Image (cartoon, rainbow, N blue to C red; front, side, top):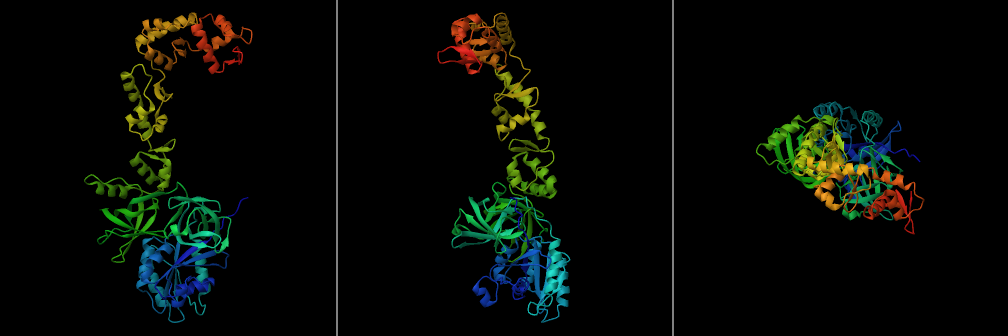
Length: 588
């Protein structure tokens, strides 16, 4: 039965402490976002809060309420990392403040483009100057021209206008990709009696349902149940706040910043090349703190040149090309946005390599063009690994089993194969051609599975070797084989005896070469006949009463027991004849 997945819109608050973020969320949703008794006692949001409501249009909205105090900026970052839109809150009686600036800098560094400004406490002061001032400041950020609404959570004035503005904001959000793999950054992990481990997060892409299997911290876990907005659902689709009951992991093994991943869809990496959102105008921190989703990890930063930077993370993260990271300098509180450009970057061992790498990153476009450029640099890569890096399959790429070759590379390598075959046969004239492994080494391929995609006519891959279908045996060997075939044409079952073969210069290697080339058939030890002998043997046996004995077969073929015994066993093995319990045979 098809189940319509449950989705919603999600926004995160941002703003200075005491500017009324939680009060506004409470007034909009009727829910208490502060989860801790200490938060409610102190009137101070410490950790992430969650609330939800249904807007007048029927659109469902979940709100992630973040702490505004400077001591809890790490918690704030965990809340906004996966959310597509922000509700910026500034108090009319206080205006732009220190934490407002820090939170807006975070949103700007994360590249947030969709936001609404709510000027709260409009019952205590004229909101107009603050509206004008903050909108002007926000216009210089990634959010651009932001609509603003004055509101009072105490009197309720402006609440309908905030709801209407949220409706307009949310209707302009880009549609999430429901077919994308899941990467759910966990912002809470806890246990429920009788249910076990539960994790929550903002589902930014994909869908999740009971029974789904994911990777979490290197282990496989199964989703036992899904809740969204406090209710169990059959399937949740992005964008959504979800709570997942998991089987296969203890809550003690989890922490904020872990990620629930679609198996095989993401690549854990601890070295990434990134491009800063703006070229730095001051010295970069050597050990920034990196934030992505709800994860926080330390790193060492190596400037390449210009806006290009290499990060060596203290712990691996499931990153993809196109991810936006936030780099925070713990000393100055400065934040920088950075776009992930490569999750499997090349080493920088040669002099000038960093500058060259920066130039490559600067020239590398996005989308399929960027994928083509990256694949051209790598030449050959596993298709699953390339997709896990975040790249689409570029136009012109050649699939070869589990591998992907850069555009034009298959033709370039295929053009070299004939020379590999020729050189091998010059050294080993009695062998039909090199084994696939020899070709792999000659072309410096990562796997012999790639060889079939590079073999072009008249070459063929036969029994694990690359052979030339038109190639002949060495002249002396060919003349001896021709003599044998002439003798067999006159008498198909008159297999030459071993001394005759040796006298003709046909030793073990020469005969094996003749068999591989299809000019002779080996039916037994030192017994060689011509191709098509099975049909000739069958035709003669058809005139013999069924079933027949070996002696009767030998007489029908007009040959010796030396030939008849192995020939009959050879025919049995190929299903031409059937051996009966009394050792007689019949044609199948």
